[in-house]
Every structure is written in C-alpha cells, then in structure tokens.
Image (cartoon, rainbow, N blue to C red; front, side, top):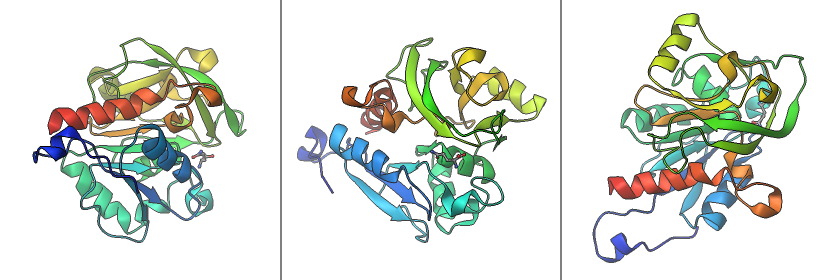
Length: 243
Ligand SMILES: NC(=O)CC[C@H](N)C(=O)O
C-alpha cells in the first residue's frame, strides 16, 4: 500500500487524501485495474477488501469494481447483493460517504437497492466491448466536479447486461433531480439500449454513483484515453473539500 503524506496530514489536521477500498467478490475482474489507477496514477492509499469482510472502517471511498461476481448467475449482481460486505457498503453510503460502482459494481448497487432500476441483457443479446462517447450531465457531485457540464468523454464499456431500465416514475425522478450524471452521447453511442441513453446514475444524496463505462480503464494516454481520470480527480477534490 502506498501512503501519501498530504500537506494536511503533515500539519496534524484531518487527512485530505482519501483512502480507497476496492471490494473483491468471487469473479471480480476489474479490481486490479481500479487498484492500479488509484495507487499508481493518483498516488492514493488503497486496499482490497474481500466480500466476506463486514467492515469498511477507515476508508473514505468504496469502489465496487467490474467483473462477473458469482458468475453473473441469476442476473448480474443478484447474488453479490447478499455478500456480508454489502451491509458495510450500505452503512458507508448512509453516512454520506462516496460509493462508486463500476459496471458489475453498478449492477450490484441496483440489485442491493442502493440505486433504483436494474441492468438487464443488452439489446441484441451480445457482449459489447468498445469505446463509447459519454456526455457529462451534472458536475455538482463528488464524482464529476472535475468535468464541465456537457463535456463529451471517451470511456470504454465491456458488458453483456448493461441495459438500464426503470419505471417511468423513477425515470422522471432521476431526470428531475439531475441524478443522471453520464449519458451515452446520442442513441448511436448507446451500446446496450439503455433507457434515455443512461450510462450512470446517482442516489438522491449524490454520494452513490453507478456507471456502466469503466473510468479506471481510461486513465493513461498509452491505453487510449485519459477521459476517465475526472472521476477519480473529482473524488480526491471532494475529499480535500470535506477535510
Ligand atoms: N466489466 C464488467 O463488469 C462486465 C461484466 C458484467 N457482469 C456483464 O454484464 O457482462
């Protein structure tokens, strides 16, 4: 684990550099990408937390990474929702601390009812793995403050069950409360048939975000895009603002 000695810590005041937890479920496969981005690209302290653990004490930001938790049996995220760690994730969210679910993490957050709606099989029933262009819709959140509203960003998706669906009432509420933080930039960019081109949504208090695209895979120019960096930069800036 890399520990960053922030100026705030050196002067004996509250820590500003957030401490990240990356939760690992059996079948997670993007946990190392998230860990690498946080530690090597952003220099923040990060630890893996196994799904059978029951506490997230000491962590500021919790990441539920992508993958195929429990083999995606029944429906992606439907079994992970019952993992022991999920009670701690719920408590973390209830305290107003940030929880970011990426791809399978988004699926788990919906199944756990920390976010509304569900992610079902892509239109066309195919696994889709490619870059898509997103539009950043709301930048007044701990996950998006480093972006400009309306900014278009290129971030990859890789999923078979990424079609976001919800009731008309929920959709109306999500839009009215500006809880859609990312949209596929038009129907041609929508890889899965999600309602209203939804790519990422927040809870009512804006401290839980689920998104199908993978920002942790878009943090190095060498890999094709740095447009995902804003999500981590926003979380770090929000932690500094809170300290
Ligand atoms: N990268 C991911 O998390 C994708 C896997 C996901 N469970 C799916 O729908 O295919």
